Image 1 (cartoon, rainbow, N blue to C red):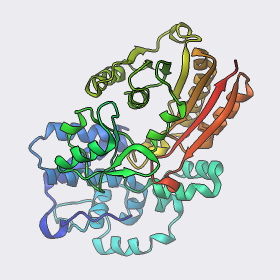
Image 2 (image 1 turned 180 degrees about the vertical axis):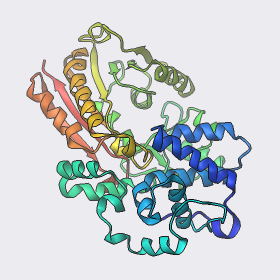
Image 3 (image 1 turned 90 degrees about the vertical axis):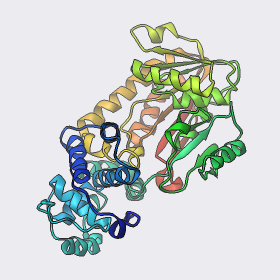
Image 4 (image 1 turned 180 degrees about the horizontal axis):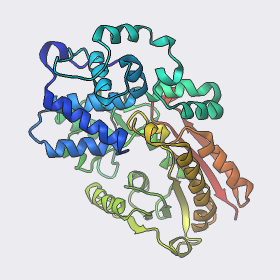
Length: 404
């Protein structure tokens, strides 16, 4: 669980400008509720002279401080951002410079407290808000603790091979030629995983032969069982990762209507589709009348609905600090509303897949059971993708068939 920055204490000292950059990013995340990924990307864009090692130091610091915020506060004896950074750097085996004034405990005190971490309450030890711990225990019981422990581990990079352009063996060879080792993933036919700590260079991310997509996410679209020539609707498509996967599954033969309320995400999907050489996707924003306009037209419908995102905490640890009980309740209401209205787009006998990237049953099976109770659908399959069980991000998906 504890990460040591390679060669840190021997080869690299903490530079003031990098340390202050960490504080600036974390201040935006913690105080202004900004998205960590975006703040980090903006900082890198504004400071292009930072080298690979500089960026690694900053990324490691801000992600781990965000992931372990409560625990670091207990170790430091203070919840100020500068103190949290100091505690994290002790974890990374850096010597804290004399000029870094933080109010944190000494390095020896932090190390001593690290040895006694097992005595801390679970919510502090695993660094989650108390309300979330209470909610998770109420919904998952004894499964809650192993799930959160798994979601606090760092996630590897998973790729999905675009079968319209490559077979998986060809992709492995192509990546090897670019100096990147990639291995197949058991149980996920189109997935590759990179070694721990490795990333895909931007030039290859923009190539279109592979897409970055968690292995757990890749298990959702095949549950639609899409067939060539069908009309398929991805009604909450976002930037289109699953729509692109569906296109690959049907061999680019058919029509995929990719819909979303955010037109900017549809722009990104169009760019990705061109790179992937996908021609069967038609994008459209969801406006008044959109659902009615597609009434009874879809053979298959994917509802990858807005959710808490708790299954993605490995990659987005800032989510647990932004999410509040009132927001979780609002999300559940949105999910129920989508399930009540969007299935109108399906033909009688059509297949619906409802999916989330949450581990909470109230967003998953609970929402599906409510829809079934309202009539018109039969549940034929469901899948819980457990971070603790599979090591992937957490997902849920249910397959329902509309009554003929």
